[in-house]
Image 1 (cartoon, rainbow, N blue to C red):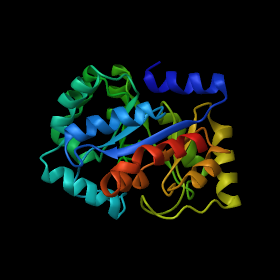
Image 2: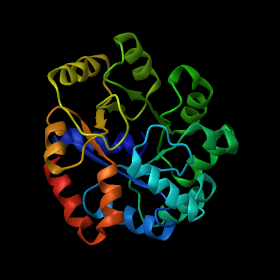
Image 3: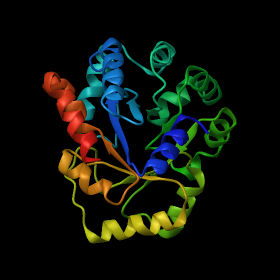
Length: 257
């Protein structure tokens, strides 16, 4: 088991739910990213998603798009995130997932990237523009190096597609709470809950819900039926616009979950 698996095993034993915050690496720079990672861990993050800056983040809303633009302007890319991880692992063993688009991995080279990512302590990958049907090569490499591949299920996913995704995923299944982009408003309809229920019947892996969770109230509602709660845009916005109150905001999310 890697760190993600161990985190969920510990939570299941205690009856807890995972708090999975997302931040954009390099927003505003990597020194601040280190500070934010350590702050999130201190205030109860079980797993942390680090966004890889990319110029065409098709799954992301305006908040994360602007964060990516700021990070790119500061010179951050996939290549200097790997040395960052080496330094971060000297200070923390919190599970880390890279959320990246496929283009930076192609440019880096699949084999080289996966080998280096494993070496520096990356635990998982989320690649929103790479469907599992086209990821066989990457999945095979990640499994050989012990990195979890985490794929996304949408409210529109059929049962046949959910079976494909659960088979390809390791660590947990990422359930996208809406047919939209990050930062959109959360709407917890009965149909949505039933769909997640069917998904959980297909797999023993945890199901974490993201997209649209922007408050402690949202987080509590999602945690009632999911194994983990992913919060991205709201945290990115808080760190950028109101960093002084970020610890209090994070504490409220943790308590709600």
